[in-house]
Amino acid sequence: MSDERLDSSQRLNSQGQQGSDALGSTEAGEKVSPLELQLQQRYASSLGQSGGVSLDLSGLALTEFPPLEELAERFPRLRQLNVRRNALQALPDGLARAFPQLVALNVAENALQTLSASSLGALRHLQKLSVARNRLQDLPAAVFAGLEALEELDARGNQIETLTVDEADAQLAGQGLRKLQVLLLTDNRLRSITSEAAALLPSLRVLDLSGNPELQEAPERLRWLHERNLLLHSRAKRRELIARALSVRNAVKQSLAIGSPAPASPKRVK
Image (tube, rainbow, N blue to C red; front, side):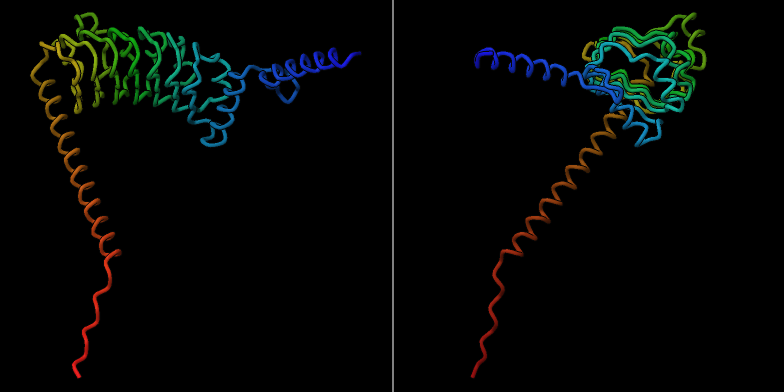
């Protein structure tokens, strides 16, 4: 074989080896994709760090959920699930069957266009839900019918135009939102919030409606909660700025004290 043909053969073998290495392999020698390899690493990290109670699948560019049956088998005690910063367009049905003990779910920064009762509606222990920065246009009452423990809902940065429920929706929602204390609706397209919708939120304590310039209709109680939140936030921000200023001033004083020459000793008079 000539040197030229030998070099060509070596290059092909090298490229093939690189492609094979990119897939990774299991202990049995089976080739797996880079995504599957990342998932396996996240699974192992979860089991090692939290005993399978908390699972972080954020930032993996997932376009669909990993198989729920597999996840449920691996994480039967899962309580916290983070799938933030992916490319999910929908949530799978049966999340409650797979993770009946789930208390915190973060699906922010995906491409969700709607929420369904079949995926979220039976998560009876869920306390915190973040659907921020998706493409949601509404928050269907049916979704929250079974979320009896929900205390915090973050829906910032969506395309929600109105919060309204009719009598059937109100009956359907039942006790689902009775414990909700924090509702974040910043940077949506809200135009109105009806009194019927507000009536479903008797425990609400924190409400942020900032970034909805076209909002015209909202019950007085909700406006008051929003304004109080802004006031408390501005006070906290002011305290933070004052604390930073004092810290900088003290640091400057210390720096000047360290850099100053020591005072000269008084001369003795003979």
